Image (cartoon, rainbow, N blue to C red; front, top):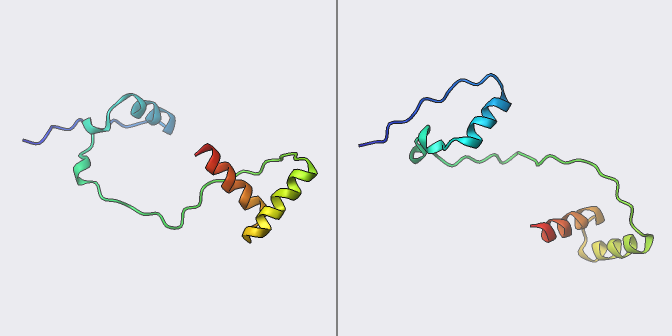
Length: 86
């Protein structure tokens, strides 16, 4: 016998909805067995510009390393940061 699902309440705004889902289990409201995978191939992650002061010698070493890999130095910095924190 399938589990009886609770109705999803109406929310006044996104903040109220976020608070609700942070404290409730989706399994009580949605039949996830019917979920299908979805791809969003054209989504790009949000980015923001930052200012970072580096010693000139360090920046030159990064540029040399990027040149050896044939990638822009800023991309190499992002790759290294992602590897370190990921």
